[in-house]
Length: 598
Image (tube, rainbow, N blue to C red; front, side, top):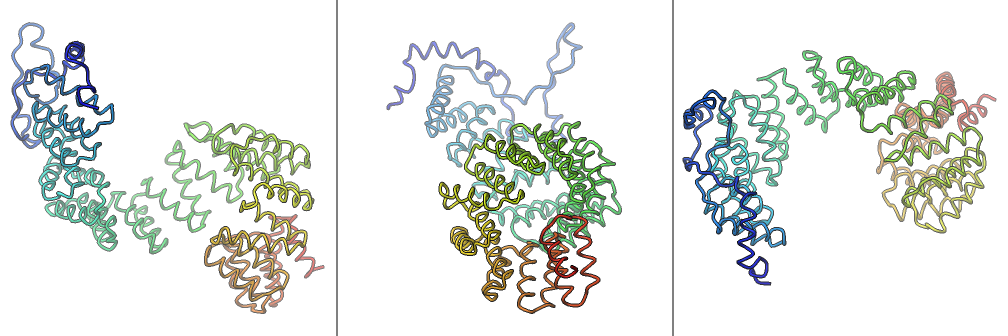
């Protein structure tokens, strides 16, 4: 299609232009053209022309701050037509034509608003050279504009024209004697893909500012982005030395140390908190590291300090609630989640879900159902429906629980699978494993390769002593998901628990351990197969580690048995007693205790 057909004929064009004059009249200013370059910030006021004298009441009116002087530009038909050409071409998807028209208009008018728009359109049209040219005109026309300076420097960096960018970046820093310009500079350069180039540029810019902590911090960030961790540590420590009470370097140093060692990161944050106990973000990071180390008691203490100092911080209140639930302090957990509902906390359904869980853990089932029922919509809705049905099952209302699941919303296949698995769990807990087995078997006819159904079907087959089904389904799952640690573990453990093909069982569990080395249940399986193979000392090492990570009743049963057989009966009894108090109805634990202490 020709350009003429893209636009209106001359007589209509004149009508359009007349109609647009009022809308675009603000683009025309009758001020003199400004000089080529703005003065530094310190002397800029001296260069501004004095306001014209006015008589009468206007003379005493305060001066209104206006944007920098704009070029004298008549609002001609040609200018408006070219503006229309650029805009309509852009709307029609002809970005190259739009960018070129805007570039021509920017050169003709030298208007900062037009040149800014020209730079934006050229960038969107993937014409970097044209975007740089337009940004230069914009900055020359509006030299006091920080936005223009940033845009020009960023475009030059993106185009790998760092030598051209350098003086503009230096000017950017000179305009901010506080040093915070270095922090803005890092954000400005964050999208640059050449991280080595960014580091080199940052080092050159920071060189004259060796006494400025922000300069060292900016170099540290650039060094980390370029993979220079040692240089990053050196620079961030220099920043901390110059400004010891500044949180950002302490946080960043801990972030750099954490891949090496959680302990090093924790010690750095703890040292900072000794001298700066009110440093919120540092204490938050310190508490999160404690959580990562599973030191929940100390982590909660830290979050409680934060809660005292920042009582309305929703992140802190949430963390105290979760950790209290983890530590089975249900009173404090409930208080914090109810507090969240009083605060402007966006994810209120999550708070309600946790409150339902707290009530459920305390066997207050009517209260749990009430909270779960209040979770309406959103990401937590499916989980709330699942928990609601499980609570009905715990109350012995098997038919009601199943009926609830059948009418529950399942907007996807994954949701449908979760509801099926929940129904199977309710049947299993109701001592009806055969019915659960049949349910999953029917579901697999519609979804034969669904991994979670295959796994659950295998676990139900184990309960029914159907080793052929168990082995066949787990091997199929391993084929479908070769990275499924739990599939290897389940097959290996099932063989080990039955004293079958123990070398093969150990190989399967070793594979699972390679895939998930920190999983306490897989660590437990490794201890169990070693015990079955007569390696008590090695078995105890794994079982102790598993129980420390997760004091689960079945892990306690295994650890206690191996300790008993090894002659450490008092420790075995202590562990069994401890686990029995937490899980009095666990079949595996009670069965083990009866075998050794009938």
